[in-house]
Length: 349
Image (cartoon, rainbow, N blue to C red; front, top):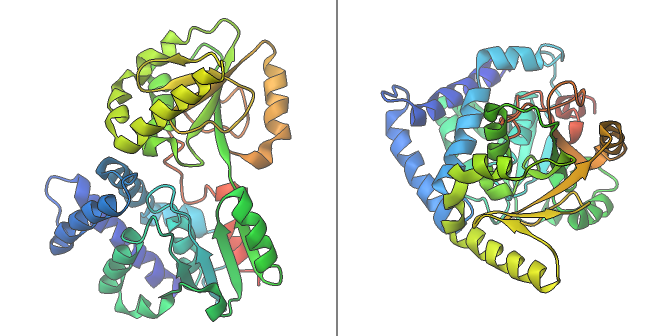
């Protein structure tokens, strides 16, 4: 199977997924009903995977999988002649729906075979999308296998995603194997007070999508001295129903009680807690903020901690490698996690 066949298999998958968001879908109609059932099943197995969250993930993937995007992504690489056909283990995370899809896509499109260790929190969606891919192109069916026990197989390379603690285990366990080990990352926003209402609405999505569980979710905002927090609460209001989600609501009540018992000052609006804090990672249902006087010091802080950051949301004149407001959960195919070029890793054994 050549590169073009691999690419077109995923382009067809993107066309299939786009049918979820069209009034008159025309491709693999019978599978759309099955996919809708899988979305419900996924939520039953993991309550964090709400229908809205899964649909958001699937829409983002469908928008990525176009011929134009593949051309822009893969043209710089010499994949046409890649015949290595290595076995690459993916140890997947399960914090948000299909969070490991890009790694899965990268292994297949690079001409290698993928061995998947699914997260216990996300065991429905990827296997079903693989079934659809195999119907689109049956030749692709020998490119994937699943595994439960890591001791059972030998691999040529591994991409493992987890917490900072699990990363230490992965680094030791796979020390003799070519590897990418991904740790916790955080995303921040830097405001200068001149943001438009539309940009602030985009920031709301960056914070609340997937209940704030993703490394691309903004967990902290840097604000100029004197910034009125009510400006943020006003644009956050459309997400007020998030607190009605049982798990999110439980986190909200728990964190509010714990921080108030500790004598901490909180600003809250009934569905989001805001705390002034120098840390980067805020708990679920909470957003940290920090006031600044000198923007250059904020830029220096971001540069010094770039290994901890996934996205920096800001206007272009604040940081060079900024992410636009409302775009953190809409990465392009060439937006690599941890800024590690996965395709280069997979083609330079």
